[in-house]
Amino acid sequence: MSKKILIVYYSHSANTRKLAKLIEQETGGTLCELLPEKAYPVDYNTVVEQAKKEIQAGFRPDLKTKVKDIASYNTVLIGTPNWWSTIAPPIATFLESYDLSGKNVAPFCTHGGGGSGHIEATVKKLCPDSTVLSALSVYGDTAKGAQVESWLKKIGVK
Image 1 (cartoon, helix red, strand yellow):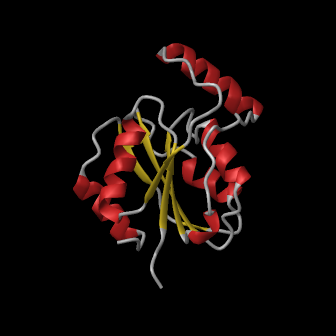
Image 2 (cartoon, rainbow, N blue to C red; image 1 turned 90 degrees about the vertical axis):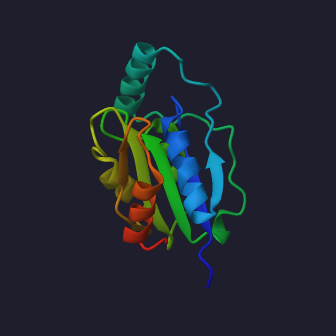
């Protein structure tokens, strides 16, 4: 059976996008960037405050992005910036909108010093019927192919 891989990510400052593209190169998976209906502010302090309020309130933004044929993928790699030690709200919307039951799900994140925070635990909570694999955590835009390859081997994707 071939492993069909979907790489879904949300990126605010392009760091998570860079990491997702490295993962695409290593896996040959299908890349899908989640775009919220209403874009987040560009200003760092403004987006940090908005993200904090949204996360505390459990807000789920509407997404422009629709994933077709999610059932055809058996592995879903989920990329997010670390916002307040958890996933960005667009990722929460995605995880609550699609049935990932029976799939291997592996989070990856970029951060400014907080590591993966509670991201793995949050994904497990939102994907109770999935096998959630170890998270990859990368500082800022420092992602390297060897680091990605090592993670993919560790989680059995490569």
